[in-house]
Length: 284
Image (tube, rainbow, N blue to C red; front, side):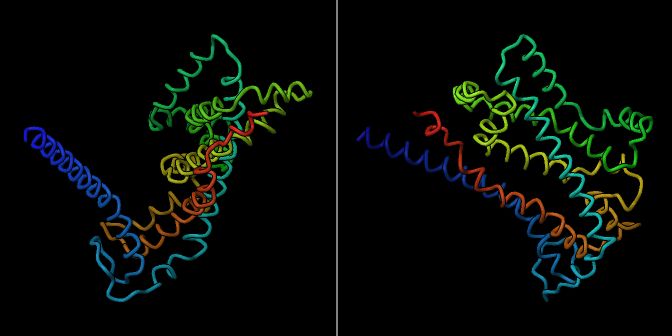
C-alpha cells in the first residue's frame, strides 16, 4: 500500500508540474500571439484602434492607402538594398574570418575571439557619435554604401562566432584530401567547407538579414535624404502629431513590411532543418 501511495503521489506531482508548464507556455504564446493578431485584424479593419477585435467588415482600403511608391515601394526597395548588401558582405567576411580561426591553431585565436565577444556586447548607441563623426570626415554620411558598411560591421562579430562554430563541424580530412589533389585553402573553403555547412550559412544569413531589417536607429542617424530612408524608418511617418495614429494603415504597412523576412525564412527553412549529413562524406 505504501508503494502504491508513493507512486500515486509521484504521478500526481508530475501531472501538476506538467499542467503548470503547459499553462506557462500558453501564457507566453498568448503574449506573442496577441500583437500579431492585432496587426492582422487591424489591417483589415476600416475603424481599427488599439483593441484586438474582429472587424465588422473586412476591407482592403488600408492596403490601398499604403501601397504607394513614396509610402511603401521606395522604402522597401531601400531596405532590400541596405539589408541585402549588408547581409552579403557580412556572410562573405564572416566566412573568410572564421576559416583560419577554425582550421589553424594560434595563440592569438582566443584573444581575437574574446575581442569579438566583447564587440558584440557594445550597444550601438554608445558608438554612434564617433561613427557619425567618422562618416562625416570620410564623406560616407547620407550614402547607402556607408550604411551598408556599418550594417555589416555591426553584425560581423556575432556572425564570425556562428560561422566558426558551424565550420568546426566540417571534418578537416575532407579538405586534406582536396589539398592532396592540388586544391588551395581558398578552393577547399569554397568547394568543400561552405557547401557542407549550408545550413550554417543559412542561419548566419537569416540572422544577419533579420537584425538589419528591423534596425531603426542606424539608418535614422546615417541617412538624411527622405528618398533613401528604409521601411524601418519610414514606418515612423504613420505616427502623427498629438498622438494621432492611423492604426489601420500602420497595421497594413506592418504586414507588408514583415513579408520579405517571412519569405526569406520559408526559402531557407528546408536547409535549416536538413542538418549537415556529413556521415556519408566521411566514409570511404
